[in-house]
Length: 136
Image (cartoon, rainbow, N blue to C red):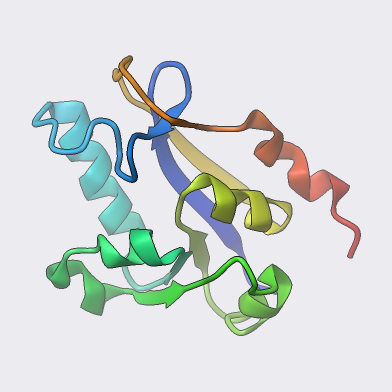
């Protein structure tokens, strides 16, 4: 299996999502713009595995620069990852996808943004240690 990473941003209290979007979506602040630019730069040329909503939110201009793979809850994470054993794979959000793929993630790149507002989805610190409990 190739290298598996996550790159994500969280708010001050671990906020990840609000009503199916990033809670800070559209915020024009420097930190938010830099985070989005960094995400697209780091994932360029690589595989991004995510659920249909996350993949569907990708702008047209970003699609040609990476291999986008839609996964469903019925997909076996190990089987999906084995299809890309020679590639660097990023696991895109949200919580159900990260929960399923966390045991295979070797590197978590988490940016903490200055957002401290409302959310309905939060980062689970247990994902960070899921790989240690995986039985190969």
